[in-house]
Image (cartoon, rainbow over all chains, first blue to last red; front, side, top):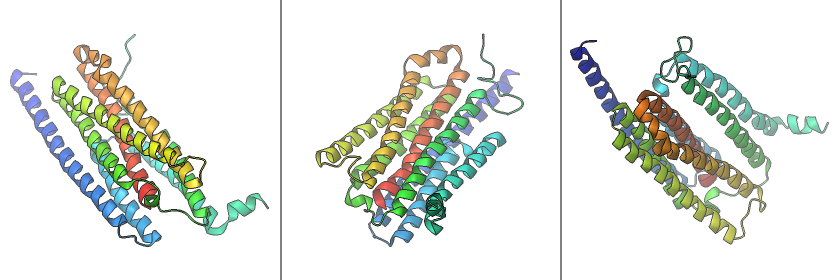
Length: 113
Length: 196
């Protein structure tokens, strides 16, 4: 590698990191704003189903920002995505179990015959 | 013996061993918290009445803690960016800030817990408090664990920077992934427990 090329690579790398840092600060501001929005919405005392939907929606947006930009998931390798897809399937199954329980009582009544 | 693929990526995975290792660990963590969230849903939907979190818990303190933890995520990622820029002094400042913010989070939590205990509210009082203390307690243990790892990289572990800066940068990135996960969990705990 020539010294000119090395200097060019280093310069590109620095520009790339600078761009990342600007994104981190933008995400930080967005997360703060969404936190304020979450608290403000809770003060409206909406009916529970709507409150749950809105609160989880905002939390999902915040979580996605953290995962995509701070954890760099937006530009990750396929193997990491594969691990997360499998995790998401099992996570959804875990959350679905209580939903099944309360929707038809099968799991509770089934156990006791 | 030298450990392989700590700096160079493996050809088959396209990742360093540490990176795939931390993501597999985080996947197991998702299932751990997922099981507790599922239990929470089951108990809440199965009960005849359930209190709104803000009638029992301190929302302003929890909001402060949310801001503290999000800020710590930013300082963590800035610590990693500092290493990528080869600025070790700046790394130390940001990493120190991350540890400090983690400590602030725990202090606020301590006051929250103390107030509950003084008011006679314990995990055994009712299902809501049992779930609150279990979820926030487990999360708090994760904060302590993350702080311990970060403190190691801020202090004695930083020696690696002198001999193998790429490896050290990778290690900080991996501890950062764990720290962001801890933040991520809190982002869901906050509305679920305090606001609904």
